[in-house]
Length: 531
Image 1 (cartoon, one colour):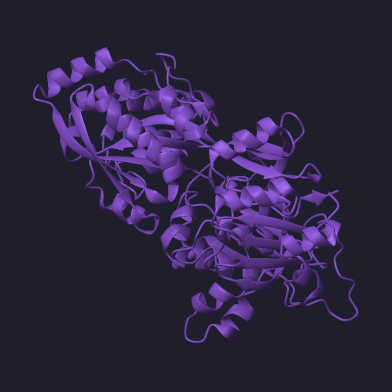
Image 2 (tube, one colour; image 1 turned 135 degrees about the vertical axis):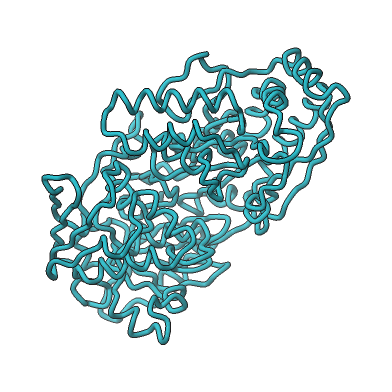
């Protein structure tokens, strides 16, 4: 795409092209500058921090390095790449070796420098992983998902050698080191600026101390984030883009107009209807990747309220107007999770063997609650474009079988807190697990440890036994049998009703190449190109 002065001014690009460029440096050309328009940006620069918003994953991905990363896998059709959870390649670590007893892994670090100019050392790696555990919240939870739980596990052998001692043989450990949370921080710089806080939480909210391919040149919360390339990056091929402007535009109609006119290069987070229309129009490139380990679903409280009766949970599953929801909420931008086989496979997500059958649903309600049921359902107003049509269609369908539902739209800022109370009879939610394994999803959503993600408060010792056995199994046949068994149990007990596996959609100009999808679902500027 050729950007004229008119389109540059319309997109607000003229000033960023000309500011903050050192006198001796050549300003990035327009083909080296990308404009991303998104609904909202990072509320902090620290992905490990408490209360971090989704876009902070993008800061961590582009401005920090991890020991390892997932290897890109081309998408069918050649419109970019996705990843394979078991295919790992070097990032800060140039090599690694698992001990003969399988109980530790030793990494050799490459010659790399932080943005400050300091060399990256094993002490920085240890401090960063120690911090991820100590800081609490989601960072600690994610680390624990790969059995990374204690600072004693992280051992500095010498400046360029780092070891992790395993608590158990957990197949999730290595993939968990490749997600955005265990990024490596310039520990000396952070400590020097942290004051009385040994983890520099306040300072790192507002400053990047990484070694990644990009630096944050400026950050204006609620407005825009500007990234510039780190020309000294050594942990991969130097990106072709030199400058990224990530602009926050709350209105999806405005974002769509900007990209349709050619005034913006790329946009995430448009409503499904817009992505469908843009794809049908054919003027832009629209790439949709099924989000691994992710589902839109209805959770039914198995611990309190009417849905402690499994017959009512199954009634809702048979009454769900699946196809209407797919079209009205997602405009077909998803993978159907209904009408599956009677016997499950070891894949996840997979369709459950339920479909729209109001006769079966009505019979189950008559058995469990002959006088009918009055209940309530909550959904996130921040996701109302998708969740509200789901809720309205479900309310109408359940009224036909004797279940009267009051809908409650919860403000986006409060929705997670309401889910965590685990008091609501029904909730529409979307969960996406970064580590693409069935046992990972089931551990967080169905295990009796009752994590914050188990919003149904479902507890069943038989389920726990199957999940735990799968997590620690090294025998493929045993693993497959356990997965099939716990999926079958979920289909029988129905604490949640899967509706659809969503697509992660992105619209971009046809001149944009190198699109890379990762579990964090944030743009990776390192691979993008602009022709």
